[in-house]
Image (cartoon, rainbow, N blue to C red):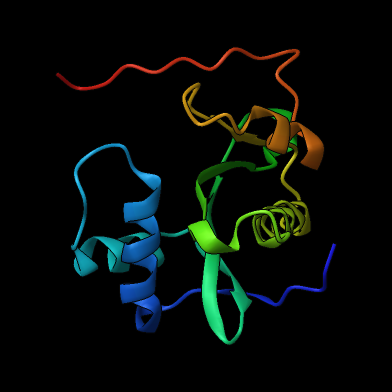
Length: 144
């Protein structure tokens, strides 16, 4: 894997982040910079970006959640893993995801979870990073 610089994103990265969100979603596109700022300011949440050629080309959101079980150690939730189309397959997604997992371990998280859509075909990618679906089932309910 190439040595890919990864850093926390800031509000200065809003335009790039919104473009990446729009590559990710099957839903309506977003142009809401205030929503991105709200995510960045949420306690326990960090959006990490992987850089190539000086620009953010991939990102992931890590939410660290307080917990009562497991000795009150937090758990991590990964969301919105995305790499710009032309940069896929170059190790950027793996770098940013691995960075987020290591950040969770550094905060003493006892586990990190994620869900991936069945239409994305990314299950093998997540398994190659170390995630497993052997002992958990992901379920979703959406507001009508």
